[in-house]
Length: 216
Image 1: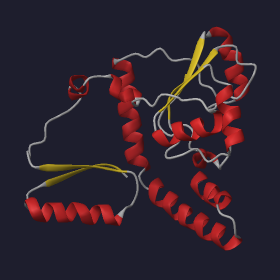
Image 2: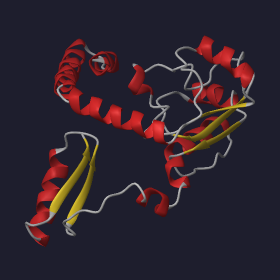
Image 3: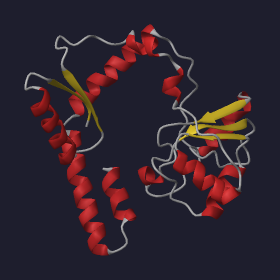
Image 4: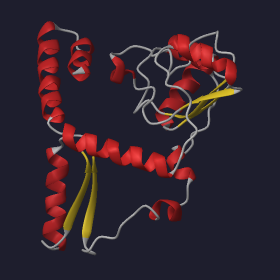
């Protein structure tokens, strides 16, 4: 239910706070009904990790733990997908995701850092955040433009790391659909307009088209 809490803090008037919090709480209830499916995905991921062992550090839960662990690493990277979208953590600057500590001894690298659309911070805050990094790249042009305006520095806009692998690499994980006519739909929210567009496309190309939906 963190979304309901975030919705409350995001709004300015009491009425809007209440409406947003209630809306997000209903969304959370609907989402929590999918817990069995989420647990199944989690088990699948754990099986994948057993087949493809990863070198993983101990889990980090606070900036103090990160400061301690940084003694063992020459570089620490943060990135990518919406890691700087502060709306996801109640509108505040998360000290771990932003590497905001002078006690971190490693080099600080921001790799394809994403804020969703733009970082909701003023130019002074942005300059202070970026100055703490040794090297930085953005995933979205909007964030790069914000940094340019706040600091005068040009940061490169780069691909999300998922695209560092080739197409053939990802195809190895795919299974072919029995139906060669399909629409692949990746959904992040309950968007009625998007579903209407899909239905219009199906009406143009034929009702036998299968819709493969991933996400929401």
